[in-house]
Image (cartoon, rainbow, N blue to C red; front, top):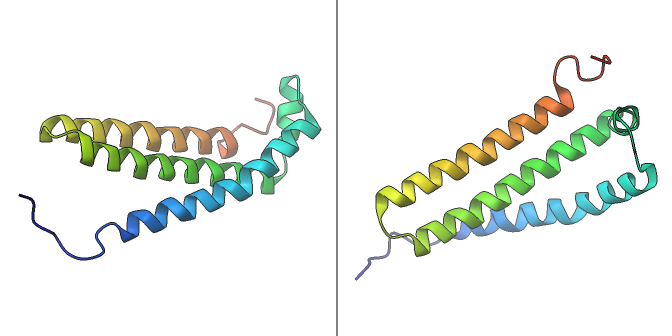
Length: 119
């Protein structure tokens, strides 16, 4: 029998999941609209699309929100359905490294040195 660890233990996760869902619901349609209107076909077109700072910031915000949203969902799945502690910790670490690495990679692409100098 499991004992309760305290009240409202899932409230923070629930709020984070809802907050990231709102950020995604607001930012992704705008990004899709920008992509469809610009329809870049070559590298120069993609560079022009992401030249405005607001577009790069919005893309990074959406990517970070997506990673946090995925993290909360995956962590809850692991806590509920993966019972061996070693396997659960390994999976959690793998997901953290993958999502954090993806956000860092996105930030490097959007704001990295040499990205907008034509290099």
